[in-house]
Length: 195
Image (cartoon, rainbow, N blue to C red; front, side, top):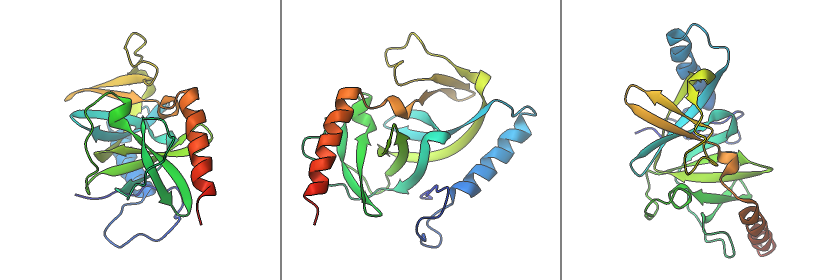
């Protein structure tokens, strides 16, 4: 299994053989998708992740990087959906537990898990997933809207694939306004208590 680190610009050297840069992944999968579809105008790239038995996607424009599992510390006062906090190159980044957000059964972190660091509003949030698997390029017209789905607040749409339906989540909507305020308070408190 390959651990992915997607980075727009290198922020630290990665161990040889342990990572694939975002550019290499993007180029590899974009080339495959463009070959399959002559019309790439209006295309969107989606990072495919697995959590529990679900396969879902995040719009790649919202993704900063994908990292192997990192040690999480508790974040007192944070909303229930926050599984903890990681120290990412000196910055405290909250970790959103996607299982909790989607109402799935929880489980302890595993060494093979990944965290997907994303833009969520004005902040970076790491989203804990079982595995980051692939990057797909799809035509926007193939992203079917899901207005009547119970979780539609998180979903801009779904993609029909030969192997089933894949839900694409809007990571920017994963934190409600009250959760974002509680998270700000918890992060401020954690920052003040750092040496």
